[in-house]
Length: 515
Ligand code: ZN
Ligand code: MG
Ligand code: ZN
Image 1 (cartoon, helix red, strand yellow):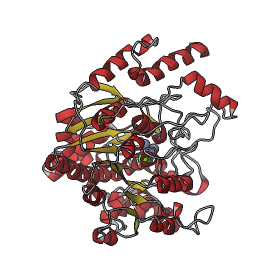
Image 2 (cartoon, helix red, strand yellow):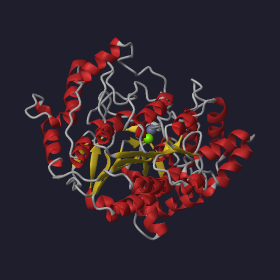
Image 3 (cartoon, helix red, strand yellow):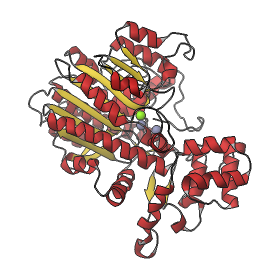
Image 4 (tube, rainbow, N blue to C red):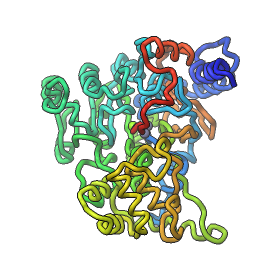
């Protein structure tokens, strides 16, 4: 295909998800998505009081299968997620304006504005044109608002509900934009963007929030004790710990379910209802690292949180709950082993031998010395004994920056090398290790889960939707109308070129977008 055809195809595909609000659009290629969007918006007849949006960052359908198996087999019950998906779940496309693979900034902007944008940007087109978010509209109606996450509170997924920045890494700026917006609840990690001695400009944002009337909470205990109606809770310098480290290695911070519960208690006092975003943000991170036990335990923590949210909807029927994954990450899959795959579940059972995240294991490896120490530490935390050549692969990734696998696909190092030797890709007898393998440490293009529950829930019923449609569902729920400007992929690429950003990014440095 010639380059121009690629752009044209991309233009049509990119506009398809965004064109549903344009009756009689000349973009005939957009007909199916536009029709789908109209049918998706037909359900809600009147405004609801509250909207809760629950984001599972980086969750794949394979993650769902893994966690479902674990819940049935080891916990003796299905996931709460099963109840949600069986009741009103479907599949969602996630591509961004200029890439088949989205990042979290473009993905979260898509559902908060109804428009696809360039990866890495937030609620802005490359020429600076701003987009209105669903929280802007909710605030104008007098509704309360909140953001809750296990990542830095200024990280892309929550930030795209409020902030407009050209680069998602401008998190100091995002902390300032939050203060100007004044959401009622902000709970997560990321103190480094609030502390005067860590921020680039020396501003003490905690003091500024306190002056603006926020109760500033820094510990799980303070979160329990507060009765303030406007809260900023920041429970760690960076992201909050992986759940497996929180529960099995004594890492601090409140669990996501508790943060969500407290947020709902604060917001329930709002006179005109609220819009709350909750993010299970570290499923993505564990997947980037190819850390299967880390992913599972964050999935289980996410499920406990979903239980809190669905119970809230059950007891507050004038509430709409939407759930979606912003994109898939890493392409991990549980594969069959043994005669007629009889060994598959048995092999996977060894996941209970894992008691720490890859982050925790690698921090210990960095502090240790020698191959025997590598083998010993990995065995302590996984129950798996590496062969000497496998330990060497890990050592090289740690100290010599040599990578065992394709450095483009497996850019998250040394974690991806540890995953490579621990699981299927590193060889060894399958029955001795987990039968999980990853195709990369990057986001992937696959379809993801989406669901609606409660008052005014869209009639999903297994439908395939586009991520921009969720904006329309929320508009209907709020009883609002709004259309943001549409940009074509071709115009976006021209704008990027005119501001000096490379049109082709194949030569860009290899890195993984943790979001
Ligand atoms: Zn993401
Ligand atoms: Mg995120
Ligand atoms: Zn990511």
